[in-house]
Length: 593
Image (cartoon, rainbow, N blue to C red; front, side, top):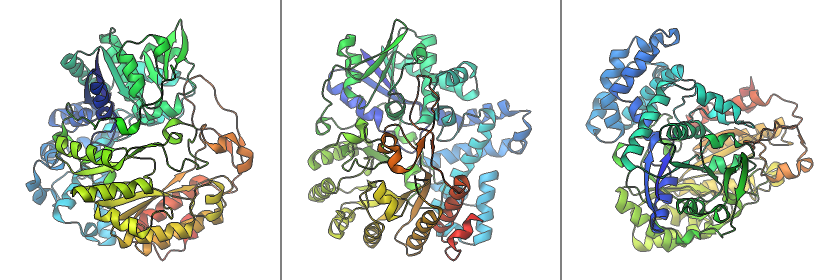
């Protein structure tokens, strides 16, 4: 059975998402015929082209909200080809022209950027001409994307229809959206799907759904295949499915797909591709006689160290393009640069944080590869892609494995750059950090969460503020950039503790040991320790809507005596200013207004 693996819209367009290259390699290693396509990239390339812009302008005619955009049709179309070639690193000489003001029509994002320049007089934070051009080109594309959102409210540059999938106890809402969809983007996605089906003629299509914002696009693809080629079997998997559809009972989605698989997709997908009978399926939902059934033969997962290196054929590596929207060198890593994505270890080496999905396979089953295996993957991927940059997408890079990996990288004299997520823990000693820098590490991200020892202990984070500060200082001394994930609205967290955390962030950024950070509002998930023992965390669970489809975030009463939305806005505003080198002299409580 020939399998076509698809990445749906929309994901960051600077590098392939990890799932299809890994699964394509796995299926081929098992004797299966497998090919892959990135329809997220292809959809954006269609929009950001002369033909795509022409269609967008025609579709927006008569929309009063688009008047400012429509007035500059000729200017937008005149530069789109050169912008895309430049962002794809195919025309670096264009930087000289594109870095100058007046090279683009100035939409809202570019206007704000120039206003900030005038306000702060920071010359785009000292960017050289090439990076200034990349920044301006990225904001130009953001302006186009915002105009496109007027045509299709589901459209978001990297979060297509995320609001539809964010809370879906019933499938009905997204089913209605699918049935009423007919926007330019949906029609384009259908044409792109046709091209891949005609090119490969698969018997099975596997679509990964890594995030909520990918669900709508994935189902648009699946629905169109069902309408045009009903003999093709379709399966869904990925991060969204693994976290939100574990309690699936609503059969409606099976009008669109045939299988839904949980957790590591290798064995489930292989058994489906082999045409296995239901009893031999692995972690797979199907519909039988109008009822959802779950089959799991109990086969043990594939050992992570034994999987083959990713395969990239079928993906147009020279057509991916980077975006440099925010003037922060760490934030930039997510959207710019050609990063080969690898996983050093399945699961989390800590797996104890009370707010995390510690009962789900992607967290609780820790299975590391050997350093030699990881380096074999790296060498194979460099040869296949021509890029020596790596993003290790682990939940948390294990210090012991990092130590061995750095030794192996240095032994083999690999010239690589890499970054990934860590825990700011004491096992990250200065000698290890210096070794990481020598082995090519350029940045790390990690959770500082509440920046408060009391709540860090309550959530069983396994770090202290003082200990994390020491680790951050060591990374900075070694020349490794740092980003912190921060949390507000955690159960029992007081307003005073929240702004004590902001004061810590202010101090760390002013001293130069923390380079980037973002505040997330705490969300209670169904698979966390807090959900299993809410009383210990001082919260009360509230009634949930029940519809047999998605379940993840749980409503709760945390009895906060302050406005969480206002606090979140204050935290993000303050931190945004700190990242840009301003606002350090403002008392932290003053950000609340």
